[in-house]
Every structure is written in C-alpha cells, then in structure tokens.
Image (cartoon, rainbow, N blue to C red; front, side):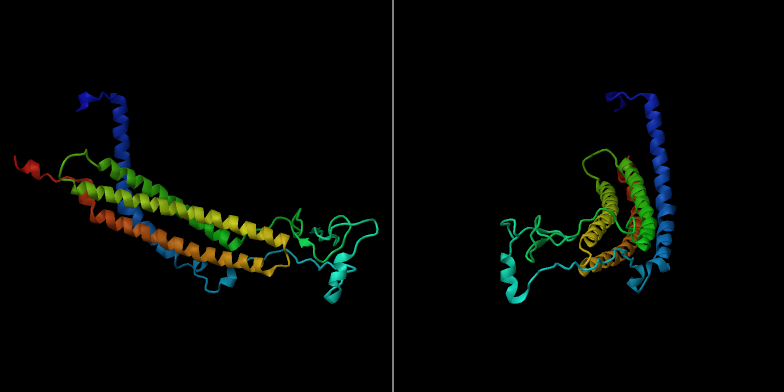
Length: 276
C-alpha cells in the first residue's frame, strides 16, 4: 500500500512521533486526569462560594441616584388640560407635540406641553465614574471559565486519539469501529456544550450592560433595577449548574471510555487470523 503514495521518510517519522505523543497524552487523560478532575469539581461544588442560600448576598449595588423630579411650570391638569393644549406663545403658532427636554421642560424650542413624548435622560458620563460589574459573580466566573476551557482542550485531545485509532474502511467486522465513532460523537458533543457555556457568560455581561444603560437613562423606573438583580441571581444559579455539568461530563466520558477501551483500541477482532 505504501507504494501507492510516496511519503517522505522524515515527515512520516514526525507524524508517527505525533501519533505516539497524542496516544500517551490521551491515555493519561482518561486514566488519571479525568477522575482527578471530577473529584476536584465535586469538591468545588461543596464550597461556600457556590452554595449561597440567600441570593441577596450576591446582589450588587447600582450607584445611580434618582434625580429630583422636574417641575414643569404653567401646566394645567384635570378639566383645564384641554386649554393647556391650545396655549401658544406670543411669537406665533407652534405644534404642541414633540420631544420633552427633561432639563428645561420644554417641548420643541419654546412650547411647554404635558403631552410631549418623554425620551429619557441623556447620559454623557456616569456620576460615580465607571459602573462596576457584580464583583461576586465576576470572581465566580473567573474560577469557572478555566475549567470550561480545560474540558474543551482535553476532549479535543482524546477525540484526536480515538480518531487515529479508527482502522481503514472494510466490509464487515465493524462493530468496534461503530463504538469508536460513537465515542468521537460524544466527545464532540461535550466540546460543543462546553463552548456554549462560554457564550452564555458573554450574553450575561451584554444583557446586564444594556440594563444598566437603561437604568442610567430612566433612573425613575424601578423595574430595570429589579431586572438587574434577577439577571444576577439567574447567572449565579447557571454557574452552579455549569460546574455540575462539567463534573458530570468528566464522569460520563471516563466511564464510557473505560467500559469500551478494548473495542476502542482494538476495533476489529483477530478471529480471522486464528483460522489460519
């Protein structure tokens, strides 16, 4: 078969060395690293930082003060509101609809009207400087992210090892090969799920940033402030679930590969050779 495709001996030697390195590393991962890692994560799940019962402890103060209400002069309410709509300035007719300037109470250049559309407060700088993230969640995220990355990298190594063990395609006697392919599919699924955890963390920061921006623009709306605390609580619970899933994935991969290690390493039986 080697005569059908000429391969440089030096390159072939390097490729063989790579295969041996991947094999040694992957076997060590399955035999030693996976069980140690699942025990570490199981211990981590018992630490106080990830077992807070009162979620109020993870709340973060939003240092955006509510400004004093703006009093608009010469406004009429009740039955006089119709007359207020018709009031015009002495200089000429102006429309009584437009945007409300929250600083002056004016609708349009000069007209004052209670029917103007409120567009929110213009924010140029934060009163207290930079708006900080939730410190409790940031600390926890910084501990969880390396674990996610480690799982992705180790799964990739083991997946490559199993793929290199797959023999050439032949008719029949492919039961062991199907086990190898199923193992590769499971490793690929775990990789994808772990990558989605990183996306989830990014979405949390983006969503929270948008809400804080809303609070800065509409400081009188309490629901935006409550939504931030709800988002923080949800992310805390999600992080605990992520750590639990990471542990479970190490357990499942370790168990699956050990139970099928014979078929993974020797996918085709040697019964045919025994007949001769």
